[in-house]
Length: 282
Length: 329
Image (cartoon, rainbow over all chains, first blue to last red):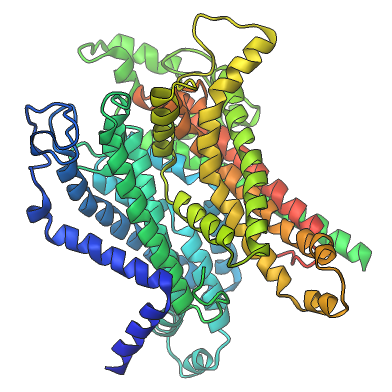
């Protein structure tokens, strides 16, 4: 009980964390009540082609195919959140395993893994993502996997630093003396105790994933079978002089969602990292 | 002591360069494996849908060296690339070097102009915000840069087109020069500059937050250090403390950020080039993707990786020279 109270107090005490949590709640509510909020079927083509705001019950107008922009925006929430969640999970798991192993095992393993981390920090990842999607097909699943596979390096770097310092702590050393196996120590002591900066960084990375998915879609490499905000901007680019609403509102939705994850990430960083000096103020 | 530092420095520089070479080698190998394992056959694309003449196919495969074993193809490509030859475009039958060479200037023009503008504007804004922490100026600029950090660059570009081209009609939104005008001399320069305004504005706006954040937190950090407090206690003029001590110490982190943002810009420029139909590398990438022109794609990616590695290594070395506290490991 006191633990829950403490969590609430932490959230209420940090402006960014508070706004981030509220924003996330709004997004989740939108997904939950998607069917109620959507005024039209977002996938359905209609006869109202490129009509403006408020015409024929289309709150934010329609696109060339007569799809309702407002309903498409609502449907885009779950796409964005799905991409953010799954790709950052992949990136977190790879980062934690590689960084944890490098820092904890040390020696030659660390040398090789650290170099691998450095290499992936230097590679221009957006083009790698672009190329893989172009070569292997642009399904939304591919997009999520590719973003995850190319963005783990910063997580690994953080986890490695954590593992390096945890390795010297008494409770880890005593576990070594007690004869616990290396994987046991890694999974029972190093990772649970060093995971907090990675959690904050992963949350931050979710905004990056949303922006990357949007960028890929904007280049025409998105999944055409799924409604996504990036796809809407790509679609609206051709009508930017005649039907500005197609691209404009989708962009605003992206900004809103990305800010929420930035605030959550920043806030978690303050809350989970006691060494952080700025103390929640921005 | 001095000699020891020089030795350590030399070792550090060599290590960074070696790690850069390794990165480029891995990028090279990775792209080769990816392209070779991808579904879809470029020869089939060349032949067209209904043509399955085996003789023609074999001839084309031999022409492009695709009939050799994979290790042979890899080694041939590697040895050419080391000598600076990126191969030939399958679609245009032109040297990839030439194709990139024609486009790289336009891309660098956009990227470098934006990088320098963002560095100057963002850093200045950040330093002022730190000096007046908590003021209205600080709150507004911090909020604005925080938001700008979440804005997709290509969307911002479209919005600027709506505002400055469609509604106000002040600036061109398409291409690098006005078609059919054939300006020469200064008129040409002015024409290109007019076309540059919107894409450069877009890129600068989305890059400013990085510099703003870095400069602001660096200045705040230095101002909180003990030696500044000591200087204040001696009664030294606040302005003098700032320009002589704080500024110099706070400017270092921005150098690092310059390298990282350059890397982002190199890829970010491509998206903006698509928005503004700018005749640079970004458009080359897009056409290469849609036409499955693998040699061109691979060549562009290699050139990008090399330039990013070079910028990052240079930045690391400059940082090491200026910051005596750096550890060489």
